[in-house]
Image (cartoon, rainbow, N blue to C red; front, side, top):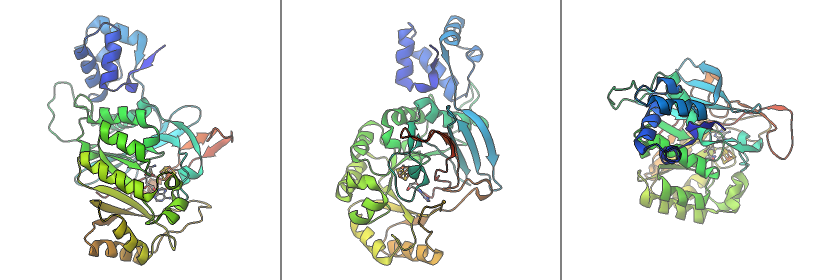
Length: 375
Ligand code: SAH
Ligand code: SF4
């Protein structure tokens, strides 16, 4: 059976090479070709022994998710629709800014956690993405953006994709092993060489997995809070019933013991009349007082039958002011890529047989997506 080498992190690739009687440095060479130089043809890996190239060509492949569509917005935001088989597609968005370029990556087809205001959650869970499909989004975007390094060319430190956020479709920490392997590749100097503070995992708060992430690969952490008390959060983010706020806050504090950044980013979707009152903002300040944190306030992106509305701009401003007045940094996420439907909640992959629970017809998937990240 052909193995896809994009499925391996550095350690896994070395083990596969060892199984073929090859030295670890050969694995590193191939890792560099694949990820730094974006190469998918073993024949062009000129410094790899011919016999090894032949073995690789016979037994392995380098195959990212197949691109279906490539769209660029007036503001430069670029969106790829990628086929992941069985009529399922995911989307990846690149957001260029003056001083950085951020890639927003998906980790699952659908999501099982069913947050009330999230269209991904509303549509059910299909499957976890493989490591190759997760890292394949960065691999593909890098190639498309002309960001791969030429063999032999030194690293100037300039990266087209300078930041990666796991804020696309799915709950990253519910697909732990594949996500960790992909994170390790993002940080590996022979692959993408990103620093831990430039890679952000966003989670709805799966407490034991937050601890495991801290022990394994403590990248920057964003936590989707959305409510200041358990009663409201139980309703908006149902995983809260399993891991309530007290446990979540304790996990945030533990995370910061190993984190490369000295704060947690709390994401907070503002829902008109639900969680956007002055009292909510003040309760939030009390909740997070022992957790060094920043807030990222996200205007809700409506989708059909969501039952929620976006808070009016003056409400958003007032909410932000209350946090800021108490010395907590709070930014409001801007919308990018409007003309190509790349803003939060506008992306639409497609999924067939959306959940194992049933439904087999082709359905339009409209996962909410982060198109602008403000930290
Ligand atoms: N599952 C992870 C990561 C993906 S969601 C998580 O929940 O954190 C990324 C962010 O988008 C989360 O903060 C999520 O709550 C938010 N989001 C979900 N639906 C949204 C919508 N309709 N409008 C705006 N933001 C939304
Ligand atoms: Fe899943 Fe995140 Fe959406 Fe909740 S907000 S349903 S965890 S993708």
